[in-house]
Length: 110
Length: 116
Image (cartoon, rainbow over all chains, first blue to last red; front, top):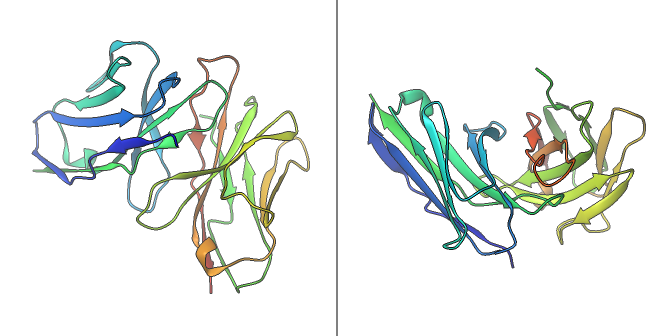
């Protein structure tokens, strides 16, 4: 059974701080790794994807991938109250469906 | 910006009735998906569709479910005889899907299905 594990949280950080979200996955054949943001009652919105080991930065977001440890993380710098949402980690192999984690709820307080 | 569109946004149906959920994927995308999310739970894969046929399906996608691409733009999910436990948010998604590095899935806004 392919699994993606996330700490459900809530993760609470003050405005301006760095939020660190973590995810582990069970399928060593996974090739693509995604972070989605989901506001309550809304659809998942893609914010980052990463395919290779290491870091990938996009604005305030940095995705980190370690395939040997089967671990992917998302760092959000200068967190804003508008970043408060559930962050979903998802993985797949080429051409196959996404396997989602349950998500981590992030709360950024002003 | 291209987007996946779904209709209706909310559907209420009686148990045992058939429902059809509709989606228009992004026009140049090749892979189409249905996912569902029961309230408070994780997003679960139902089925993927490529080249006018099902390419992958989960154990949730039993004989009560079917998918169709009736024309060049629409992609539909039919539930033949709805059950109370089918109540969920249903998301359509599409990917460009050419090769291993074009698998970013873009989601529609969802259809909230309520079975009463």
